[in-house]
Image: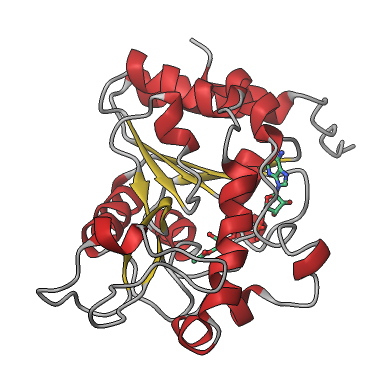
Length: 261
Ligand code: OAD
């Protein structure tokens, strides 16, 4: 008589992943972590799609986060980013960000942290060398290549209710230093992230819907290269199919449990 295997008891998957983390440490194998907006949800930052509420509910991200939208409606796009900056101002890293930073301090060089987030919370938690694939919400840059007349400190003084800061001489606009749809990711950060994905033994994919490429493709790269892939997300994501284990829970509860010594 054959027996079908008993289902894993609750928590068994968590234990398996904890063992994988420990094994990677003991065998000096690299770990990569890819984070998305859900990583910061418990800090009170709305996820990218949740941010389109209230006044902004009528828009899709693809209608605001593009260069074409900014050239067409600079004030509207600037105002949307101002509302996102306001949402991020004053928020603190959560227990998940801190668990990653603590692990990195304890195991220097073991973990490459790749994020799609522009909120700076991994950096604020003290994580070194964060690969910020989508830029930084706190910074601006010139829309067009700056000319001799373009001085960022002068432009900063030109911000009015009616428009983003601009060079008073040539009109070049300041724009948020984030990656918009259709734009290239920062070359070096993407290259480093691809190397980490190709060479890691374990990849944790935390708080991302897995809908936006090339970031989401890093999980496929890791999987194809033979790494164990673990998704941490309270909801189904598009990366669940490549995961060896899916942990249905939140970043701030699961990461401290997974990364504790
Ligand atoms: P999304 O808003 O698409 O997805 C957030 C994910 O986080 C969802 O899968 C949620 O289920 C999950 N989530 C929510 N709360 C969570 C929690 N407490 N712990 C863990 N997971 C949680 O955000 P991203 O996948 O990051 O790009 O979006 C990717 C990119 O799309 C963004 O970086 C942005 C956007 O276009 C650019 O700005 C270029």
